[in-house]
Image 1 (cartoon, rainbow, N blue to C red):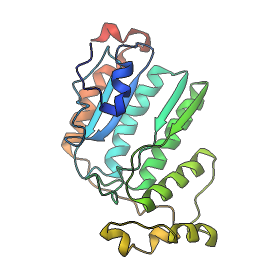
Image 2: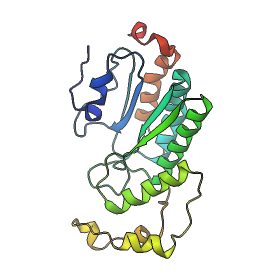
Image 3: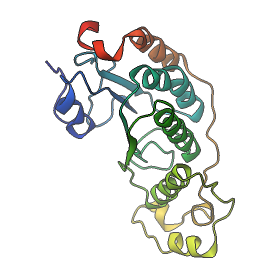
Image 4: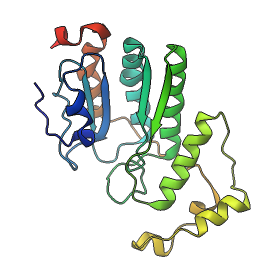
Length: 221
């Protein structure tokens, strides 16, 4: 039986929490709306939550990607990979306290695409998600499309792309005087930083579950 509320991941976790054929992993800000998705929630063994602290950086996502997310994906060998590409974890988003660059999200998406191809899945479904700064969302999702199609984002956008971004408006204070690179580039500056102990602890906490065969979720709980 699920111990979560019906709003975590917009209800996706509760919809599949007892389905042994569906593995779910969520990376989200801890202690932030909707205040669900604890690392102790396991469902029938198919739920893997990574609630991360404020200030979450590119290097910290890289550690979780390499030590938890990709090993879990390889273990599950899914028939289809579904990725929700939320843009609200970016440093410039007003509703989160995370500090990712879009480069980190692109690396994660490329790695998951390679995983889907490597396990000979039936395909990969890429969805949008949160994101409340129109410039960071547009730049991030355009880069997502480039990654999925094997296109290297340009150092500077062509005039047509720049014109689209210059037409955007935003009522918040940051939208009244946006920095020039929001108009002229797709890629953010990297957001590096030391990997904090709480991130390493989170990875260690989930690592023992990575040895569980994908067909035996229920037996692991």
